[in-house]
Length: 205
Image (cartoon, rainbow, N blue to C red; front, side, top):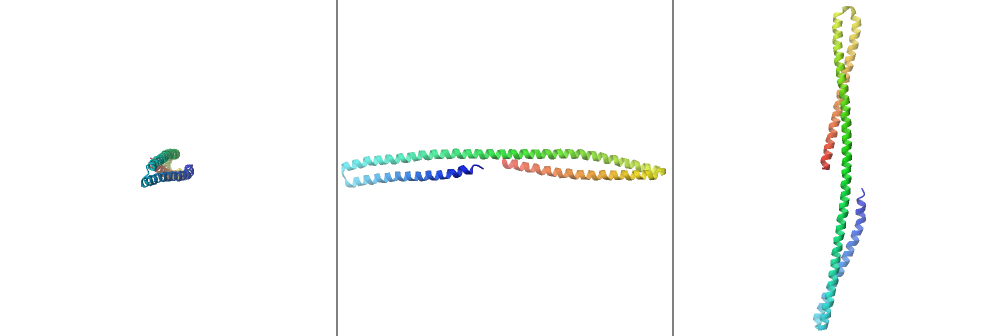
């Protein structure tokens, strides 16, 4: 988030350098034009000493223009090098920030996946216990039914035991269905988290 400020503060400096470069190049061009006019005037006049003076002045003006152009070229190269260094630093900061964000996201996704896996393991254990309980209650129900059929003298008492066993078996079956539904929901949640983690990893790569 701090990268826009250096770019905004860098823009006025760039504009100022461009104005200075334009001014210096204009001065260099003016010196060359002036030297050309001076030499042309001396040639038209035809005076030998004037031609010599004009030639010397033209050389001096040309050297000055060359010096200005050369210094401006060096300054422009230094400025470009500084700009590239600043951009490289900003790119490194952005890359580091994105890497940190991706690592934080990956760590959060791993934590959520581990939590979901632990919850699924706990529910699977509870489901296994509920299934064993349902099997036991079903076995007891069968035993009670057989006892009720074979013991006519205790029909009333065995009937109550049979009803209780049926109630427990029904509750156990309902609990099994509920636990299976919860496991299905958590598995779907885990699959979506893994898909989101894989998609984010693909984009960051």
